[in-house]
Image (tube, rainbow, N blue to C red):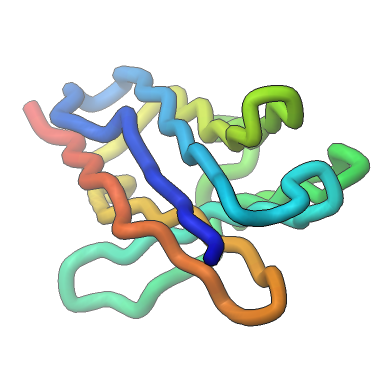
Length: 114
């Protein structure tokens, strides 16, 4: 059984920063491609960032240059560093991995507001 537990969300002012973490268990983490998604109110879930097992990364256009995805294989953890946050980044952020099947965390709320 794969478990993904996100943390690090919260309320931040526009222009602020947050660092999300996703602790994974129940899988061979070092070979897994890890992803962050987000879902804003009344919007569809969207892919934000991807990191492959080799460390290659990809980002959505809306976050490119502001967000950085990284991983620590020794800790089975993937991170999302979010800088220059705007109200449009307000959403629930989910960690995802395909490992025999779709696996999702429960999400962590990020609210950007003054």
